[in-house]
Length: 262
Ligand SMILES: [Zn+2]
Image (cartoon, rainbow, N blue to C red):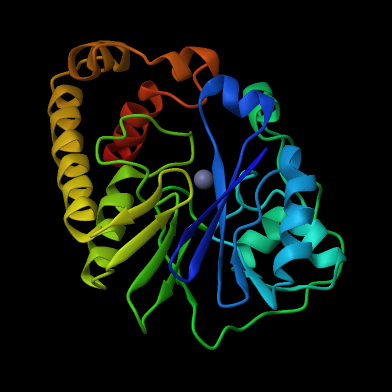
């Protein structure tokens, strides 16, 4: 299913599947000045086809390899539309790793990228490395008017849930760097339009660092992960159980522990 919202010169294409609606998620691609940011997921491939027919984009920028952002990249390349993405993102899309059942249910598995890629360079939008959510995560930045397409950088201030590959310390540093750019508006891949994002990006960096410090104190005192999740977060979350621990509060604590051991 596709919902279209207009925010001045930016069009939001909010895509859902039966599975994502059951779990309460959507993922958005955005169009600005004849360019698309991200390309949705496998179960929304027909919606993406309709977006491409309507917008006829000159190029597509991809924020990161996750299947809800880059899930249709092979369709884009197959149509001969130019693509801007990091080397790591393209490499990961050429041989996507297996994803868990809940992600296949929600978004579907991305078709591997096998068509040749025409590189895209926008005269207006640039990809800026913004790691933490995952190692190849980028934001799309329009310096001319301070517009930020955040991919999965923001999502909300108090996000106490993580995938196995997340690095909360790095995320906090990235949030401060991106806030320092001074964006006037943010388009989040899941939250949609966010006005005046700088205080929110800083609040998320503050909360993340404070939470990391609380976890570190408990780890130093010898507390196991399950105790820390219970004491700090009130126990594991519903997505944590539904995903078999793949998208969970326990992963947040584990990531902090990994960072201490490194
Ligand atoms: Zn992601």
